[in-house]
View 1 (cartoon, helix red, strand yellow):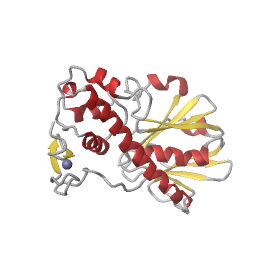
View 2 (view 1 turned 90 degrees about the horizontal axis):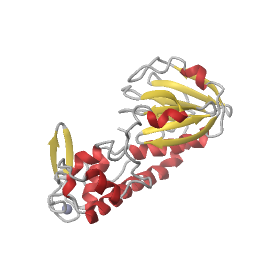
View 3 (view 1 turned 135 degrees about the vertical axis):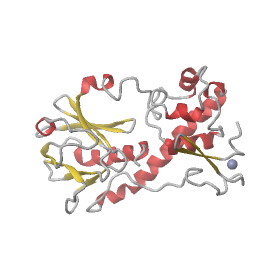
Length: 271
Ligand SMILES: [Zn+2]
């Protein structure tokens, strides 16, 4: 499942072929993914020039010169390919640029989405309204967490997954950051000292940046004819490693809450 770093590297890969380019052809090969595409999507994108690409949480944002922003979400299994040799049945959406590059959205499970929103209304529209700061942005840090978590008795892990506290963090990176910061996932969020919140915010940044760097180093693969953007393997500290040894020598544990697994070290993350 694409997490924030995969979306970030996808956006960077797409920027290399889309930024400043005119979209000469736009083809929706079906009418929906998780929900219907905007009915006028093709008309509003065809002939437009891409002015910039960015990411917000796990959404990719493609700004065009008509005052609209084209928004994609990769859902469970979505990915963009650049210049694939041929199209398959899971290739649902195709853009062609004035340079003749073909950019194709593949999504076998179809939990992704495509939307088009006026750029100046973006922050007020779903799902961005009320969303917390970017974990790699300037607002996010120990001070932000101290304010946002004050008095909260919920476990810190649940709070970090709450998009109103911080945007775009998924299960993997929350487990990894809590381990790096040495904080128990079950610790009441409002009872963590400021110094430990500073460490936690730094850990969140560190695990995300390391993953983005790993994805960036796989940018070479974009030259592949069927180059799939954004996917890379990473070495997790605890995620998916139940029963294996932590660097401290203790055995990594797993607990399940409402169907979601938490991986942690009972020794490094005691409180
Ligand atoms: Zn440990």
